[in-house]
Every structure is written in C-alpha cells, then in structure tokens.
Image 1 (cartoon, rainbow over the protein chains, first blue to last red):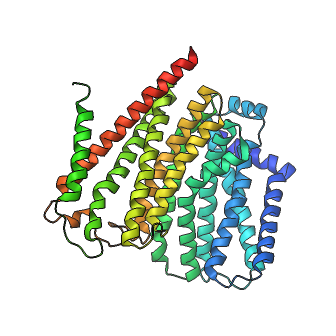
Image 2 (image 1 turned 90 degrees about the vertical axis):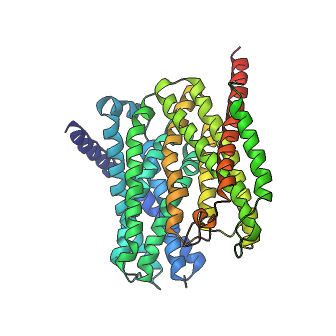
Image 3 (image 1 turned 120 degrees about the horizontal axis):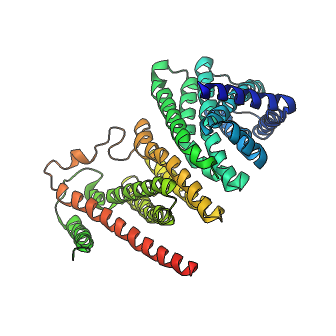
Length: 221
Length: 220
C-alpha cells in the first residue's frame, strides 16, 4: 500500500514538474515534427507502404531515446538524493516508467497523426491494430529506456553510452513491433498477430521484473 | 593429475572430434552434402559461449552481493572468453553459409540475432571502459550484464523461431535430431560440445589468472 501511495505521489510530481516547464514534451514534439518534415522533404513520397512503416518506427525510436533518457540524465545529484531519501527505489523506478509511458503515449499518438497527415499517400487499413502496436511500442520503449538511462546516468557519460547500451536491447523489441505494425499495414486478420503481441508483453514483463530486481542495487551509491 | 584431468579430457575430446568429425561417415543429404560436418565445429561454439556468459551472469550476481573484486574480474573475463567463441560461431556459420546458401552473410534472422547478441556484450565491455572508478564499474557493469542476459536468451532462442529462417532447425528445415537416424553423428557431436565447453572454461581460467596477477602488480 505504501508503495502504491509513493508511486502516486511521484507520478504526480513528475507530471507537475513537466507541466510547469513543458520542456520535454514540447522539445521532443518539435524533434518529431521536424524529423518527419525533414524525412518528407528528402523522400518527397513514400511509394512503398513497408518503407512508410519502417520510417515511422525509426523516427519513434530516436524520439523516444531523446524523450525517455531525460528522466534520469536530466536530474541533478541533489534532486536524486532528495527523492531517494523520501521514497523506496521500487517506487522511483515504477513512477518513472509509468510517467515515461504516459509521455510516450501522448507523443506517439501526436506523431502518428502528423505522420499520416504529411505522408498522406497511405493510411494503414487496420488502424486499430496499428494503434495497438503504437501503444505496445510506447510501453516497451519506456520500460527499456528508463532502466538503461538509469544505468547510463550512473556511469556519468550521457548520450553516447545511452545509445550504445540500449540499441542491442531494443532491437529485438523493435523487430517485433515492426512485424506487428506490418501485419496491420497489410490488413492481416488479428489471429496472425497474437504471437507478436504475446511476445512483446512477455518481453516487457521480463524487462520490468529484472529492472525492479536490479534498480535497488543501482541507486545506492 | 587431480587438477588437470579435465584439461587433458578437453584436449583429447577436441582432437578426437577434429579427426573423427572429418573422417567418420555422415548421412548423405541434398544441398548439405559434406558441409553437414560443420555441425561438429559450429554448434559447440555457441554452447561454449552460452556456458561462459552464464558463468559471467552468475559472478555478476555474486559480485553485487559480495562486492568482491575477484568476482568482478571473473565476470568480465568469462565475457571476454565468451565473445571469442561467439565470433568463432559467427565465422564458422558464415563459411558454412557460403557453401550452402551461396553467401557469407545473407541477413538471415538467425545470423542477425546472433550478431546483435554479440553486440550486446561489446556494449558491456564499452560500458566498463567508460567508468574509471573500480567499485562503481563493478556494480554498474554487473547490473547491465544481468539486465542484458535475458535479452540475449530471447534473441538467440525465442525470436528466430518466430521468423522464417533458412537455418537448420528453423522454419521447417530439418534440425539436428532428424539428421542422425543412425546416430553416427551423436558419437562426434556430444564429445565435441563437451570438449569445446571445457576448452572455453580453460581459456577463461587462464585469462582470469593473468588478470588477477596484473591486478596484484598494480596494487603493489
């Protein structure tokens, strides 16, 4: 019960901090929009729907690395110490993950809308399933990147380490996501995608479980 | 003798499999032909790698609770030895692929995932280089190692089954069990696995001893 209360307060704190400055959300949003716009200017048109899908996920991958890595890298030493005194490590990790998931959900939804608007030559026939892929993508990106950004911030070597450490871990997830999204783009029946959806959920549970086990060791300096 | 018997066993087994693997009879199969013998040299590399990485995770977990430097060195040296076997596995696989699939690297899912899992451990080594403070390095890299291990298992054993691969044992291609109807291959394959795993462990112990001597010299 104590944990749930702490998580609730911490999420509230994160949202409040973000709401005051609106730095991360606006920054990453501008990042996504300008990336999509740059892609539009360089591709002009995407004839192939598979390229359409792959490009979307690559843009999302980099946007989420930028968005989620802020969660630990941005905090000062003092801020971290303060929250560590007040809350349990599990609560900190869960709250950051949940907050990042919410952030990514908002971002990916807006990005998907803008993406379909700019590259209007094509929309997935099964939008519902594509959106489920997007939701699962937001969850998996935030679970993996939250933990990796915690590791990278402790190593004290920000951006580059974040990319090196997270890419090999995120690639299997990304492959599953692209496969699932491709099923939606091809308009396949739902039965064909249950494997991928189940696998993504399993990977997420695995990542969250190991993060929860390891995080208490990580934050204790 | 008591301490070295397994080293002798490993050498005998590997020499035996090298000779018997090239000379003993194998089933005649289309496309594969004589390349089927690569089974004795390619697959044991992955077994050795998995065993070494498991040793590494074991010592990483141990070093988180004991905080001893020895456990940390054991963890990193077993990764170093495991990566050698991973690279050898990729190379033997690529050479085999040249003669059966026509290309060294055809971006088959199995090849890709194996390469990514080796990348994972290169990232581990780079993470270690990025941190100067010894205790901090031990702790953070142990955490990354434990975090990455389940992902490697997913990459090597689960994901290739979801994709269509040309690799034997995947996508409806016959695997090892259907080759050896007369169990001639078992006579070589199992000793080869055991032999290479022991050799891998031997490499790891040697590397560990060199590293601890170096460490001692630095501290004095």
